[in-house]
Length: 193
Image (cartoon, rainbow, N blue to C red):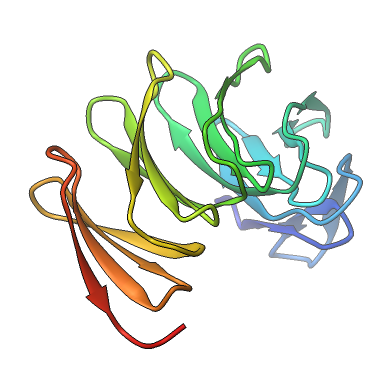
């Protein structure tokens, strides 16, 4: 907006570019790669670093930032939620629900290995998949989760389908079709391990 663009880099910096003259303003704070950035409106931006395990809320007007720490390993991804909240997931096997106003977080534990992806669902729920071979359906209000087991190796990804169903794929050479309400699954063998 306003002939500006925001970029981020493996050197841990953000740059706000003036597209008219090519000049840029550099924002420093992360100690390693920046994995992604979300613009929040009114010039704040939220960045997360995969290597330093942190989130930073930036004021793009004056360059100041506030640091949010909690993950003990790489931050893999982040979703913005309503009410100034964000949900991050990490190679430490946890999800964190962040209050972006004060930087506090609520930790969601249950996976025993890194989390490869998270999808947001209705009614304050999220579905995560992990290299521990499980899916977890999280209630983001009370922190409880329902575990879905069926794969014998790391889950590489999951796709949401209609009628509260999900399709996951794994390094074990299978696809699993899950009924997230009833808990049942159907396994499709793709190839040998």
